[in-house]
Amino acid sequence: MKGFCVGLIFLSLSLSTAYTQGLQEKYDSSAIAQIQDEGFHHSRVMEILSYISDVYGPRLTGSPGFARAAAWVEKELQSFGVENVHTESWGPFGRGWTLKKYSANVLAEQDFPLISYPKAWSPSVHATGEIIYFNPESDSELNTFAGKLHGKVVLFEPPREVKAHFEPEATRDADSTLL
Image 1 (cartoon, rainbow, N blue to C red):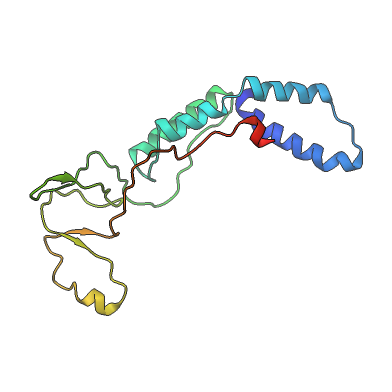
Image 2 (image 1 turned 45 degrees about the vertical axis):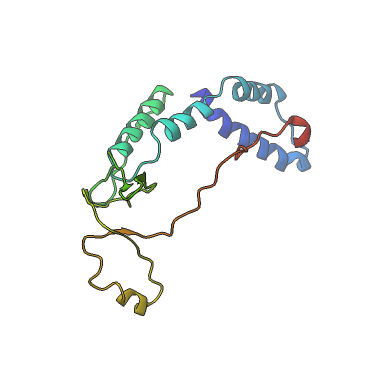
């Protein structure tokens, strides 16, 4: 539990120290040194963040992924010594949804994969059909689609340009540039 709480304790002590410096309040430098040592050398914050974001990943309310992530969090909190750990229920929410398998391909003279994702809570389908881009901006434009969407694969967003990446999207700053 020490590694998990160190960040919060360190932050609150730092804010408290910054606030009270003007009041000339004394503080225990050895206690602060112990907290800093715990935070800098024994913290599990990044490990926990990696598990909840990378291992359990994005998850929708009511999904099996949400239940697995909640169970993992409960187990971790109990291993830290936290008592009375449980998941609170709320709702009614409705049915859950999870994406198990999805693929889309354009079948034409030159077949190619269509980079796309289904909307959450959409029903399962196996469909083949003409692709239509659907984004009416007025009632009159909406009326032009009346009776024309049956059996079609409907795209709600315009195609995005996919550019080649030759430079990394993120860079790490050196200590000298941060100073």
